[in-house]
Image 1 (cartoon, rainbow over the protein chains, first blue to last red):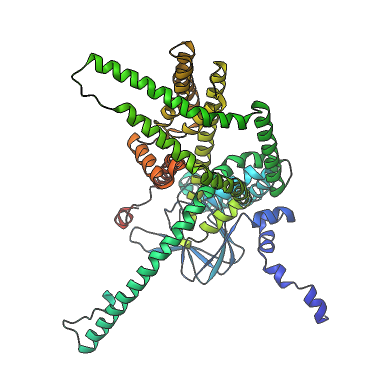
Image 2 (spheres, rainbow over the protein chains, first blue to last red):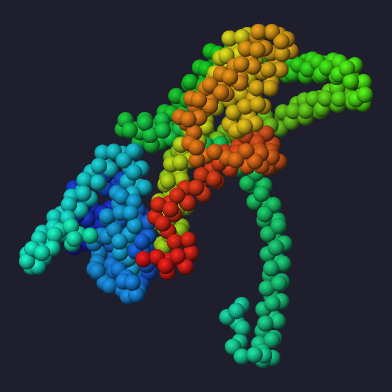
Length: 177
Length: 378
């Protein structure tokens, strides 16, 4: 391609933009460009060093994080303080979404594995957005709810599968808690 | 410093020399920083005192105007035109009110300047009579020349007020320009400014600070709107009630009562003094005087403020101990004069509410207060 044209139609900056990242996340895939622009002003982009704690189990949780670059490990500690790795997440993944709508404590800890850029979406911002721009806010919430329900459905299928493996001894309640 | 301390006892000569040099250098640089800091603090103090009042008023006003701006914004207009529209409506309404209710504000103001000494004279005259009467009844009480003292005192206050008028007029002129300007930017970029400040917090505490800033600003908005609305309604009630009884300067007295109503406990009392004084001097102890007293105390304060406005508008959380109110008024008055007296109490309320919100937040999530609790926790 002609270098001049490639310079004019440069792809990288667009792909580097926060809007591009947000628009390609599964929960915001159905938002319009205008709504993505609104969302861009709503979220907080934060950079973390390697092995930096994002949040600890028991912290007051007020929102979710999306990984723009880098990776994060989710873990919990037992009574002796030994860490038990629950998940490793990479770019495009998200975590902490359970505290977005309800003010509860974090149920696990999160730490970065390398230099990481996280995009945070918090309850306070959503509450403000609901007042100032209800339509966009409900679209954002709708997308989030869709993903959370998908996860819930996958989890209940998994529970049923495990139940079947155990021979039907355990009830879903005991597994969930 | 402790890192520099050697492990074994006794220092080598080199270490002693190094310690000596470090100490000397730190004392010298400390002195240098201190001497430059005093001029720096002076500088910042001047800047602060100049900017504080317009910034504070703009802050309050932006909280007050945020709901109408948001209302306009919801209709589809973007932020900046919405603010301009609200400004326009406000200016129009204000001009209309001033023109329609009192076309002779200027002469009213002028008359007030003339009448104030007259009222003071009459009042001191009454007190003089009262003293003479008392002296006749109780001759053993030493004759105390209170009346001349009061006369002197009122004259001093009057002359001080008159002398400071040009200066304060300049100040008010500055406020008239600065406050709408600052308010505009607070309304337009307030969220961005707050976000910029919050984003300065380190990652580990960012979430909590962000959440708290939201909760606190919501509380603040409620508090400020409640207080201003309360003052407005009291001012209207007093102004209207006084004009019913044909008391002179009813609009001015209404404004005065509304503004002083911002100070708890003492404000309402100060607010009613000039009205009752004018009624007393003009009409004596007649029906109009008693109507004024009833209006101020029973209707405005007890009925409307205590039974209707405070339960609806003001949350119990922002209640301050009377002693704290006095401290706030005295310190505010010392720092910024009369306006300092008015805004001292709200500022202390704001600080108290912030602390309470932080405490409630801690309690909601049962945050460990110290590392000890953290170890004991699950």
